[in-house]
Image (cartoon, rainbow, N blue to C red; front, side, top):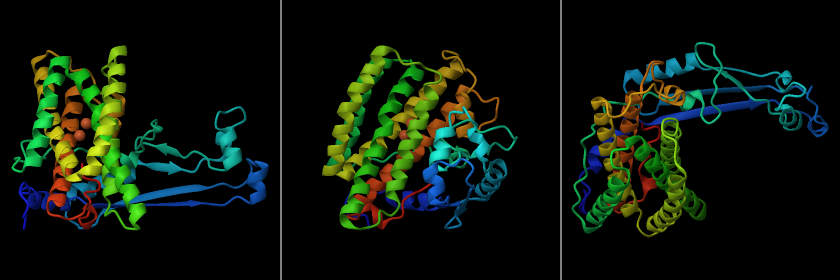
Length: 346
Ligand SMILES: [Fe+2]
Ligand SMILES: [Fe+2]
């Protein structure tokens, strides 16, 4: 089965991931303005935008609570077409609406209040799966795995030295790095799909989802820790080096690249566990959760930073699984597209 060492997690990862596949169906119907209407910039031309969405478990294996979640989301999101008057004279949207004929959709939360985030929408939100095993570890057996493992371990030393116990700051800075691999991997698989005229098995989307999820971690933590000028400078430098190094590394050996990210995620779980310990000891103030986190993870309104760190840690555990799984597929001498990607796995 796993003829090339270091793949013992593949079976369990496959079965675990297989339970969570979703299909996402989005349909959009936009009535067409006449060419002359568009050209003339007629705000009075009939423009309707109706968007509906549905998510359903493809393999039927995700538990019933997920179905409840889907119902909850459907109830929660009420999208209304916005009349042309939304771009009222003098309004900042007027130009966009009158020229392109695409009115902004008004999205409401289930309590009727307006959805205030443009950077993500209600159908992208989710409840974190906190039941995930945080202890799971891929034991490195091959030379490549050991190299990935020790590369990550060696990176921890300067990180510990620089941040020490400033976990809020540490989390924010590390998320600027963590959001890179998914984007690079997704980009390279995208280009490969184009070059070879072949499907990706959903892996492009899965890796981009991971990148977006990591970026949302950053958007959350920057609400509670403001970066100083030298930290911003450090991000510039690290991003310049890491993006290119990971890009090259992925081209040369995707199985090494994914394995390394798997170990990075294991370290992230450790860091967030330490973060939680500091919060519990009272060394870090357990401030109210940022509004963006409450909406993104569908947390109760009275949630705190501790709740946020807990759901972020669960996300990292899912990223760990996805990347070790991807590496295992390569270890089996197969390509990612041959195994359905764990879409919506979080
Ligand atoms: Fe993260
Ligand atoms: Fe992560």
